[in-house]
Length: 191
Image (cartoon, rainbow, N blue to C red; front, side, top):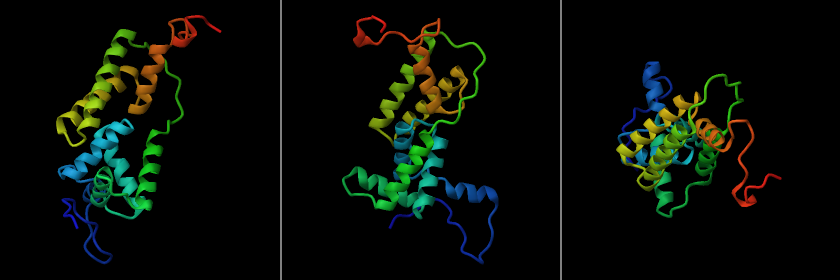
């Protein structure tokens, strides 16, 4: 099997661990290459931060009844053409879908950033996302996506990356007066 660099949960009746140790055990082993690749893959797919990707992987592992290291190994094997166990794949898909689900939107009161700045930050985010998709275990690409995601969230006043991306896209397609821009295929004619 593979050696994980995360502490295992103690056996029943064994010694207890602190809450911090239990929390770190639930997170994937970031320093392990397969886990780093898995985190990068989830970051690019959802999109989300590295911390949130770790949470998604941890939730999927718990739901599938495997360790985070085993989940990362299954994801890496799947990328090489070896099918994931059905329960692991189902748990991963459900965890990703749950992470993509949008919470109810609160009324946003404040100034929206300029469209030019929004487009610039969204373009930077998409570029980082593309680089991470090409090389999911690249630590610099993960950090760049994390930074771009943070900037996008702060710029648009959103707490989740997925919500910030959707808000940026909506902001770029909405006119200052409130209506949407005409679709490109409509020839500029509103219907």
